[in-house]
Structure formats: C-alpha cells, structure tokens
Amino acid sequence: MIGESVSVVLVAVLCLVTVQWLWKLLNGIWLTPNKLERCLRNQGLAGKSYRFLIGDMKENSMLRSEAMKKPIPFSNDYFYRIQPLLHQLVTKAGSNCFTWMGPVPTIFITQPELIRDAFTRMNEFRKPKMNPLTELLAPGLVSYEGEKWANHRRLVNPAFHVQKLKLMLPAFETSVTEIMNKWEQIISKTGSSEVDVWPHLTTLTADAISRAAFCSSYEDGRKLFELLTEQKELVIRLFKFVYIPGWKYLPTKGKRRMNNINREIQSIIKTEIDKRKKAMEAGEAVKDDLLGIMLDSNYKETQQSKIGSNKQHFAMSSREIIDECKLFYLAGQETTSVLLTWTMILLSKHQDWQIRAREEVLATFGNNQPDFDGLNNRLKIVTMILYEVLRLYPSIVATSRRIYDCETKLGDLIIPPGVVVSLSILHAHLDPNVWGDDAKEFNPERFSEGIAKATKGISSYFPFGWGPRICIGQNFALIEAKLVLSMILQRFAFELSPSYTHAPTTLLALQPQHGAYLILHRL
Image (cartoon, rainbow, N blue to C red; front, side, top):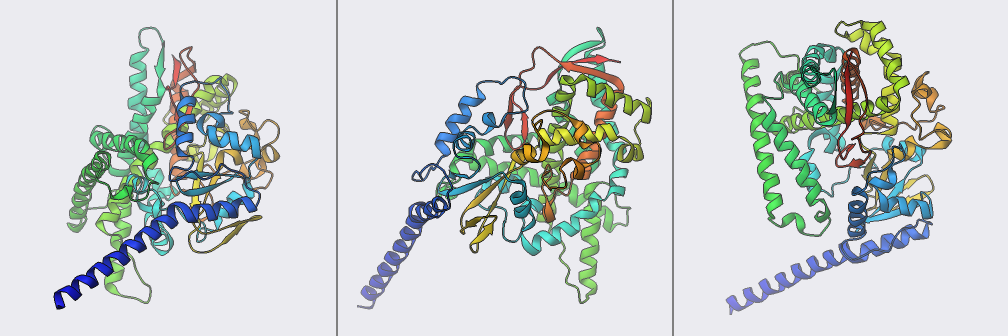
C-alpha cells in the first residue's frame, strides 16, 4: 500500500515536472517570441515574421553564402556583402528594423547617439549569454558582468599601462624583423614580387602577442594558435545551431572537439603559468610581459586579502587567469592583424597617402628602429591613416547587448526583457550626418585635428567600443600597428596586385576573404 502511494507521488511529480518543462519550452520558442514581436511592431519597427525555432537564420545563411561567392568592385561600401539580409531590411524600412536569431529578436541600432548610450549604460545593456560556443572561444574579461568584471578589469589593467607597453617594444620589433626578412628573401632576385600579406601579418601579430604576453615566440606557441584557429572555425560552423532549445545539451561531434581543444589550450597555458608562479615563489624577478604583470597584480591582491583590511579583495583563480591569457592570444592577434592588412590594402590603393606616411616615418626615424616616443607622439600622418582605416574597416563591425531584467528605454524605443540590440559600429562610422558626404571615402585628413574634431563633437567613433567597457587593449593594438607600419614603410613600397579581389567578410573579425595580394617593392 505504501509502495503504491510512493509510486503515485513519483508519477505525479514526474508529470508536474514534465508539464512545467513543456510549458517553459512552449513559452520560450513560441509564446514569448510572438509577444515580443507584437511589442516591437507596435513601436513601428519592421522585420520578418517569426519563424518557428529558426527565425531568420536559414535565410540569412543562404543570402550570406550567395554573397560570399562574388567579390565586389573596390569600394568601402560593403555592408550589403557581409550582412545581406539586414541590408535588405534597412533599404526597405530604414534603420528601424529587427531580425530573428532563432527565437530571439534583435533590434538593429545605427544611430551614433543610441550606440553611445547603450555602451555607457553597461548595467542595463549587458553582454548576451546566448552563445556558449563564443563564451568558450573568448572567455575572460569580455564575458564578465558586474562586480566580477570590475575586479578583473582592475587586476588586468596594469598590464596595459602605456609605460608597460614601452617595455614590450623590443618583442614587437623582433617579430616584425622576422617577417621583413622573409619578404626580402621572396623578392631578392627581382626586387619586387607578389605576396599575399594577410597570412604573413597574421603570423606576425601571433608572434608579437606570444613574445609580448609570454616571452615566447610563434614557433613555441604554434600549437596554441593552431588550436585557436580550429576553434574559431568550429564556432562559425556550429553557430547556426546554438539558438535551438536544448542543443547545448547534445553531445555532438563538433562540441566534443571544441571541449577537447579547450582542454588542450588550458593545459598549454597552465604549464606556463605554473612555471611563472614557481619562479615568483622562489624570489625571481617578475617578467615584464603581459602574463608576468598580470600574475604580479594578482599576487599582490592575494597578499592583501591575507593581511586583511576593510577593503574586500578579489584575486583571480588559476582558471580565470588561464581564460584571460586565452583572450590575450585571440584578441591581441586578431585585432591588429586585420587592422594592418586593411591599412596596407588601402595604402596600396591610395599611393599619395603611402608616400606621405613614408616621408613622415623617414623624417622621424630615418632608417633606425622606431622608438616609443616617436611612435606614441610624433607620427601624426600615420595615426590619421590608422584612425581612418579603423573607421572604414573596424575589426568588429557590430556588437550586441541584451536586456535581461526589466523594460528599458533607448531613445524612443521601449525594449522589453529578452530582446537583443545589435549596435552597428560600421553604420555609425559611415553616417553622413557626422562624417559628411564623403563618409564612404578614404580620407585620413578628416582626423588632422583629432577624433573629437572629426566627429564634430558627437561621439560616433567606436572601433574599440565605448564607455566603461572600452577595449583594454586599444593602446597595445595602436602602438603595435604604428611600429609594424613604420618598419614596413622604411623597407618596402607596395601596390595592389592584379590578383587582388576585394571581398570583405566577417568571421569573428572583418577580414579579406581571398587574401591581400600586393606587389612588394624593395626600397
């Protein structure tokens, strides 16, 4: 009798749990999306009707695949190639539109003042937590929120102080010299040759981040970069599945490989961290690379917490330090390599600016190694060029934020919880109301009096984000880019090769789909 009663109770509980789960599923994939769609349409936003589970993802994937088959004429107007579905909606309805990432509606924001506002209000507009693959690929500071983000930012920040970057200059110079020597060998017989500079610059920045972050070299870290590259490719391939409810619980082959890669990466980095910690405990001097500075900062935090004080201290765990190191590798390599590649492409197209930049570099450094003061303070034309390249070809063309807790106002929009906003950095950078009728033209002169003057006092320039979460590595990227470009200009002239095809595409960052084939000439 008791056994029958227990069975009845268990069955009842199981039925209740099943009903709750089914209700939650129905609410997440049908009721809530339709409710949110009505809310957005009532505010005048245009978009396609919600399609069960997949939203716009299938159509977007098809349109992108078709667009990727065709290069475009050389133009800085390429949004229609990288985001064809959004381009169709914007062309038809203006910027007031939304798309569907599975059952999640995403409002498209192009107005600079709204983008700036969303970046600034970081507690309301938070990083989306929808994509476990991206979190696995790029963990650490970029994925944290609230107090945890603030503590990590404080602990990591000393590694990116300007004076610390000065100490890393020799590491950058070694990496650049190695690539320059390879180019010299390629063109040694004729004095000029066609080179796809994209893979070379990718290797260069990988080597530079290895040396600057870990006092090693690309060869030492080759396995790590190979694993990161494979992980990026897997994320892109699996991305279309992440919005399917329950998919993250399925043990697919791709996800198993992602997890195996992550374990390998963590093992490689942990070995280096453990070696550093033992050296520090033995009283050895802290190395002046990113890892050494971060470990020192974290060690001091740990000691303060042991001493005890009114102030609360939050040292990072070993796992968190590994995640920050992985982020160093990925972000440090990706951002600078695409910036340098698009800079060389645009200077190949605009020879007058290449000549002006070379004259400035030679007037500042001659044929000597560039020094930190000259790079940081005296390269006005080179800086203008890099700013303009970042405006036209930002490494990240858009970034997303999600509303979680309560209804939030952005401009005239009332955004309910569960909605994502996509902040189009590219559209803000090409807004003719800010940049003028030549907004889509390469014109570094617009930055001759600085960013504030170029934007007419309107904050509309976001190559590294904005607000409290602005990229911590922006000075690192710019100093490295100035050094690399200066050393290239000292030794080479370059022009577009007939083999070059203009095909911007977005994977994680904006990059040339078919490479960057240039003709290098030895000076």
